[in-house]
View (cartoon, rainbow, N blue to C red):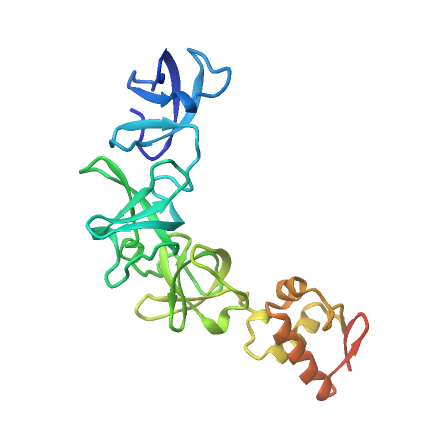
Length: 280
């Protein structure tokens, strides 16, 4: 049986005036509208198509690619809010994805044009595809499979007064504090991060800065530690260096880097040259 909200391999069985019917390996048929039929497609061809609900909630196939499939967590833009039903999200298909009220977090009403992180679900009761922002209730905080220093994937889930709430490997809830943020972040951004602390209650703190030498809180000490890490008295970075290069090497913004090397220069611990910095 073809799966709603997934890509399915379907074979064209016959054409009609308004499109073509395709069948899965069990013989279940589904319509591909006329305007969706690829050029030169013919009866007997196998196509990989996404299946979702049309405006009448009937299963239908499409050649268009949505921004996510069932089970995936993706950032989507709110395009409309119906006070009786819920919010509608643009996910790249003709019919917008519904975010029902009962699947919205408490005290968090989506606003038109805002981007929110949602999980795409197949509601078995209504047999419809819907979205849910109750991601944090789906993934309870846990530390069973993680340890401090682990490299993980972070998805920015929510703004927080102290930073950002994130999803760790799409499995765990985590907290990214403002002090560990070195660039502008938006909801849905995916970043490489590191487990910084695992609390007694199982909650997890993460950082975008690597654990180890580059996790040293004092920026001046971090730069000095980099000399030791490279076993060199010279580093090819100074105030003229590219901001991305500085961020990749030191996990610092260019502003923070310039302030740190300026401080080290005043303390006579380094020399600043045209091509880098050198230990005194």
